[in-house]
Amino acid sequence: MNRPLPQVLNTLGDPRVLVVGDIVLDRYLTGAVERISPEAPIQVLRVEREEERLGCAGSVAQMTAVLGAQTTLVGVLGADKGAARVAALCAAACVALDAIAEDGRRTGVKTRHLARSHSTDQQVLRVDEETVGPVSDATDAALRARVLELIDGVGAVIVSDYGKGALSDALVSELIGAARAAGVHVIVDPKGSDFRRYHGATCITPNRSEASRATGIDVTDLAAADRAADALIATAGLDFALVTLDREGMYLKAAGGEGVHLTTTPREVFDVTGAGDMVVSVLGMALAAGATPVEAASLANVAAGLEVEHVGVVPVTREEIADRLALGVEGLAAKHVARSEIAAVTARHRAAKKRVVFTNGCFDILHAGHVRYLAEAKAQGDVLVVGLNSDDSVTRLKGEGRPLNGVQDRVDVLAALAAVDHVVVFEEDVPTPLVEQVQPDVLVKGADYANQVVEGREFVEAHGGSVVLIDLHEGRSTTGLVARIREQ
Image (tube, rainbow, N blue to C red):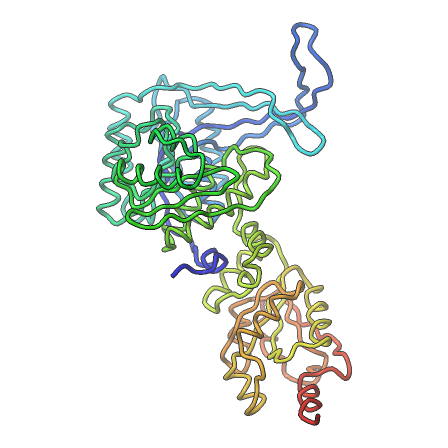
């Protein structure tokens, strides 16, 4: 049974992921084009901004690290300035770099020249400086030994093959064999047209044109995608294949199973660079965290859609994915957070410098007083977490016959409010244990608690937070509504 995507996202944790492949340094020179050169019929780009990012396998490693994985990157670099810049960027991205330096080899550098336009930046030229070709036998042997040492204890290995020469057939074969023997998923972003070199991998993720070249099947529709996926599975001995179909989303097919078409929402696409990296990053991390193939691929589909809305290769955060999910059909489910997951969710908000607000209640019959109260609570910060008493808890507090609405109905109604970001159900009669899990910056209660004990106050104030009492709106209460209904 596949879970709602918000639940999958909240349970990713911080698995260990090993990324192996071709490492490149991406440079972006951005500026204005205002004239044509007098020397030749070409544009003159006046550079105003320069940026460096990790590319190819480095990009995949950074994406998994941004998503929260403990990431190690293995590959080959030259002994040059490019390698030093890669090392610095890895350190800044919390990626453990374990690369082999090869004398005489040039660290790949791709320089993209971008011109400002009305809504975004557009590429006008790309310059590649690199060595393309097999590494030396000594380097290959050292790389194979390094990879085999690092497989132990990881949840997934992502093979990022850009055909630059770091991944020999022997390395790929040994890596896949060792990983699968250890029960570790291997996800491959393939290169070329002969995918037999990836035999035994968990999954490969070719795009439409790559799948067509590898199988000889013109992937023009879903029926063709299904046949191509079957051919890929048979050729490479895969558990499943994931064919990316650009604007049509993705097609997932497991060995011996039914195909699944994962659609995508129409969006303005600024740059498809890095979309494939995003797919394997999320796919690998989600599988490492125990997600099913459908769950992992569905999450990767959402993340890839976000990535193409940026220019260049830009890592996507969990918060961005969560926000996008909240806008879609799973919006209500996105707000319902399991008790076991709420601490991790709010920790990510705090890490993003967001102010977390907490309040709680039974919210049995939601009325105007509740709506205004929750809107004022949300105004105290950036993220509002609502603790909701379970049915048993409400009965103990309010008496037999309550609640009138079951807990799932109450969750859904609260989640439909724009002011509410997360709803978490708790079983206790007092919310103090939940408050300690959430660790809010602001604890909100009604003004009727002015002369009462506010559960969780001591914890919040001891941790630098504050307690805010909000005026209630007279004449509006669930108890009063119930009494009037019963009088009718």
